[in-house]
Image (cartoon, rainbow, N blue to C red; front, side):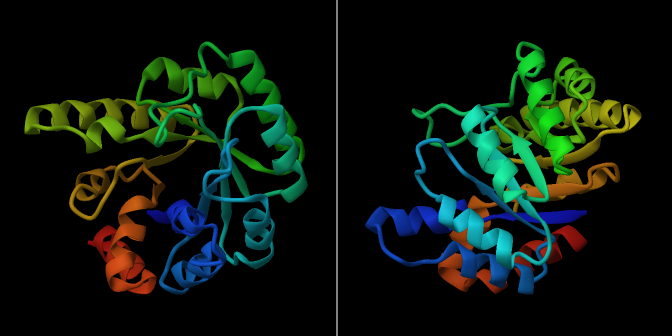
Length: 237
């Protein structure tokens, strides 16, 4: 299972003071040195953390893969086509939200999303759709010709009981099986941390996890290398 490290919140710390540090580009380098398979960033429309300059420098320096999370808008499409990350993950976005609140509604936005997917594919960019573990959304992602899906694990991560967690695991399992049957690449992420990641490792079809806040939070205390190594070890176990 590949580990994508989301470094947005390194930039969040920087933007709080509008300083030159901490540098997300340096964080990406340390994450890769520690075993990350991918660097993930979300260029938001309000530029609350990652900036265009960060994205340009990351494109020049990331040695593994660069995954750009972005809204399905013309502005972000133009950025992606210019920077050409290895992967684009289309996500829903509201300026009022603290963090991404749910998955992309591909069913309702099939036409516009399909058009963006096609343009990104024409530029040789892999396209993932960030969706809730919902079978209709998985089917819609396949019909939109996406390369794969990233399943939103927020409800699983926020489950307050064993029964609730089990229900969310079952929803994830059903979506993973359908995505595999349809030939989609499969990733997952949102709200995952060192204590709740283990149950997801039972799914051999799940190819990648994108984890950010938990790693950056631990890095504040232990350093980025140790934080990423700890997560790599957790995945290996």
